[in-house]
Amino acid sequence: MKLFSKIILIFLFVFSFISASPKKIKAPDFELFDLNKNIIRLSDKKFDNHIIILNFWATWCPPCRMEIPGFVKFYKEYQNKKVVLLGICLDVDDVLRIKKFVKEYKINYPILIGTRKVVGDYGGIPAIPTTFILNHERNIVDRYIGAISDEDLKLIIDKLIELRDSKNSEKVKE
Image 1 (cartoon, helix red, strand yellow):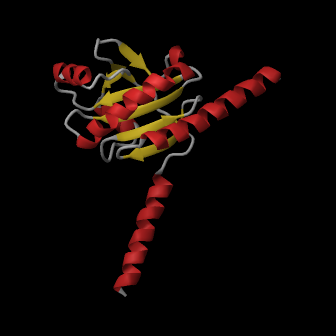
Image 2 (cartoon, helix red, strand yellow):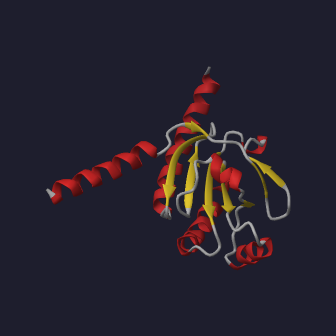
């Protein structure tokens, strides 16, 4: 009986995780400050037709710290492929500490200061890091709770680039 209960619990956990993962849900727009006090909106024209990665993180989070060098390398390779990585830092109380951290880790992608509103708009962040993947139409196509590996990120983004580019070439043919 105990084994059966454990199997049911595992099944419920897996099912709830699968059913909770977002599929083609329009990403909520936001208005957040970057580290230079510029307002960044997800709806900005500069993000049109871009694949967007939103990474919710904090300076004190060990898995976040492990993830950052991979993101730096990834962004260097993908930023010219209409892929945007936005780090949304949840250390909202100390911008100077965030700036120091960004310099120390040589972060080359935009860092935004998170708010309770953006966390709520994205369904609450159950753990950090949490990463949302948005396609070129700004639909949430995936969510990762915990660190995402470089390999997994590249596989997902490469597929989205291929899909975006094939859709764009279809539009040109029409």
